[in-house]
Image (cartoon, rainbow, N blue to C red):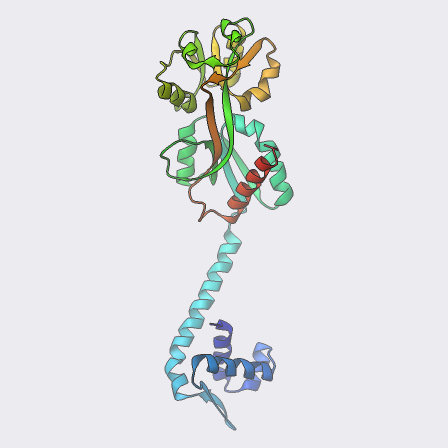
Length: 298
């Protein structure tokens, strides 16, 4: 169905003449004649009567004329609403993530994204708490949340990268003898853990629960950096993600890191309320991140 043909038909009937319709619409007479012949062929019966007095609808044309008028009116309204939506569409993406991801990934990701789409603004929201980021995503404050994957969550998910936790300990600590520290050994030393307003690190807590290891954390802090300084003072050991350690461990030459056996791994990715209904800008941002992971830039 070609709406334009119906619009031309209505204009021909309104003006009662091909010539007058041509002048208003900017078509040639042969062009309009071809369109009307094509429309009549599609419908299966004549729509217009041509005479020396002008052009008027046939009896069959009169019957369907009100429906054609409604069809054209609705199409015009749809086009108007689409134009309005295009003018009002927000040209930004609001992204929420943990501070570690904000430092490790976002500068390069935003740089690449702005190179590709300089007209799209990126609003970055940092938050330590997993539950808070999830709530902001569900309420629409965030378009994307870059978090660790958790089971049973009601949002669409795009995998990005695995991030392994490491035990962090003073260089002369007894556990430095292990290349991989057995998980059971964590029950002994004083453990220092990162926490947010939601509680202790959800990925580490899940690890302990899965292996039935008592959570013996003696001290928790809202700052990863504080945990590192406490360990540096030989007050215990900690479990921190490799993404953070790559950024900060060089500032602490008296500390060692070791993987655990079995390993503690979190799966980082992008949570979106619905990929199918996400804005074009949001989908482009996600595509950019996935591309950078494939290129080993993130």
